[in-house]
Image (cartoon, rainbow, N blue to C red; front, side, top):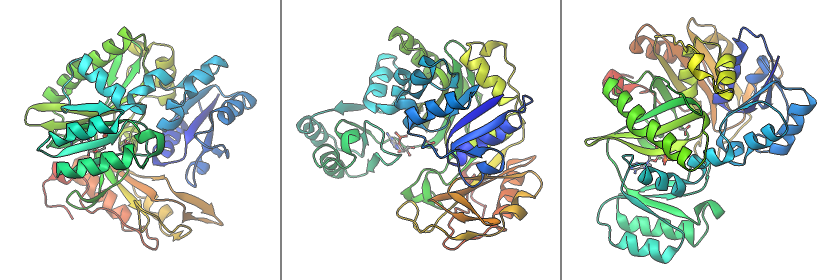
Length: 426
Ligand code: AMP
Ligand code: GLY
C-alpha cells in the first residue's frame, strides 16, 4: 500500500509518524515534506498548493490513499480533483472546505444554524463596514474572509483601530483578494479550546480537546503566531463542554451543510472561546490543527490508515477509535524573528538525543537535512512532544527534551499548559 501525505509542517510529520505505525506497513510519500518526514517517507518536491502536480504524482506512483494536511489545497478543491480521477483522498471537498476558506460563509451558516458565536457582520463594501464600525463602542475583531496564511485576524481593543484595519484590508488590499470581504465581530473574552471531529458524511467522532498557545511569549502575550505549543486533553473541556459542542455546534452545522447539499468528510476543527455565557465558535478549520496534531496523533492508538479509509467510505460507525489516555504536551521551537522574517540555515544540535528520551517524539517543521544533521529552514522549526502519566509529567519531559536542543536564535515558550497546570510552571 502507498500513502501520500500532502504538506511539510509539524502536523504533516505527525501524520507521517501516525501512518508509519499502521499495520498495513505502507510505503509513504510526503509532498513536499521536511527534514524530518524524509526519515520515514520519500519526500517529493511538489508543493502542497500544486493540485495538478499532486494529482499527477498520485497517478504516476499509484498512490492508494492521500491525506491532506493544510487548508490551501483543500479549499482549492484537491479532494474533488482527486476523486474525479478515481483517487482515494482523505479530506473535505471544496464546497465543505469553504467553512474555513470563506469566513463570511461560515458566519452565515453559524447564524442559520443558530450556533453560539460572536455577534458580527460581513461586508464586501468598505462604506458599509465603516458605517457599522462607527456604531460600535467595544473591542472588535476584523477578519479577512478569505485564506490569509493565519494572519488575517486582527483584534482591535479600540474600535477606531477596527476602522483602520477594515480600510487596510478592503481598500488597500493588505491580504489581496482574501481581504476584499471582511467579517467584523465583537471581541470575546475567555479561554480558547480546539475541538476536532472526524466526520464521514453522517457519523461524527469527536476527538479529545486540545489547547493551542497562539501568542509568541509567555503569559499569552506578544504577537499572534501559528501556534507555539499545545496540550491534550484540555481539562477545561469537561463533559458539559464536550457534549454542548457535539449537540449545539457539530450536529447543527452538519445538518445545515446537508440542507445546502454539502457532504462533509474529513476533519473539522472548531476553534472555541469558553465565555461566561458558554462556548462560542470563533472559527472552523477544515483540517487538523498545527500544533494540535502533534499532541493528538501520538495519542491515537487506532490505525490512522483504517480511520481515513473508513471516513472516505462513510463507515466510521464501524470503527473503534482508541486513545492513549496519557496527556501530551508539545513545545514549539521557533527561529529568531518568528513570526516575522527569520534567518534560516542555522545548524540544529541535539535532535537525536532529545528524540531518544523515553515518551518523547520530535516532529520537524522548518528543517532541512544537511550532511549528517539538520539546519533550520523556516519559522516554526521543531515540535517537541512528550507523553506522561500526568499532564505535569508530560510537561516536564517535553521541557527536559527541549533543553537538549539548540540552534542560533531559538525561541520557545516556557509556560505551555500553564492554564491547566496553574501558573507555577517555568
Ligand atoms: P480565527 O482564525 O478566526 O480563529 O482567529 C484567530 C485567532 O484570533 C483566534 O484563535 C483568537 O485568538 C482570535 N480571535 C478570533 N476571533 C475572535 C473574537 N471574536 N474574539 C476574540 N478573539 C478572537
Ligand atoms: N493551531 C491553529 C490552527 O491550526 O489553525
